[in-house]
Length: 236
Image (cartoon, rainbow, N blue to C red; front, top):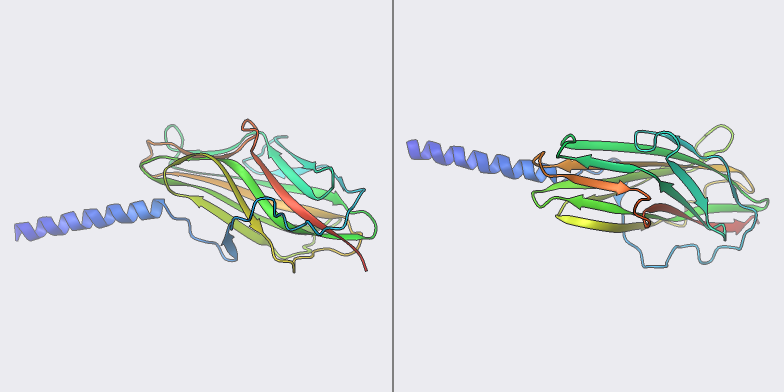
């Protein structure tokens, strides 16, 4: 009887430990969310874009625990076909002197001035950052959603697109994760100004509370940035 009791106790402990470890390494998908799916290098989905001039960015609006003050900025590529967001200090750290679970967010609204006679769509998302997960387990998570909004009243002009990436094995280094979007996502009328509304969340989880896990989108690593690729089309 004593042996049976010890076996039951050990079995329970093993199952509990396995469950705790499994929970520390998973991140359930939210409704409508999909995992990032890597695309071929250089395939941005906008190679067939009409050439465009006169695209301009307005004053970027920031909100959230990951980009307080003036710690993010947007940059337009010279050809007007890509908008990049650069963060100065967007880092979610868990374990060590930090809580076992840390989540930071940043909502970025980028006003985009559309040249007369054109409309556009987002064709691909690129996220470049740095993640570190301890050998003992835990996870580092990137979550993002974006939506196109009306410039004047912030009324939605497109569906919400949600993506996420989970790092749940021992790693330390830079990452690049991308997602191509389906062609059906045209989002605004001819020549309309619009807001690119991007919400980004970084989550760090330490399984033991002692070992550190973190994920960063931070310009101290010069390769870190978020890029949204645009395809422009003349109105017909």
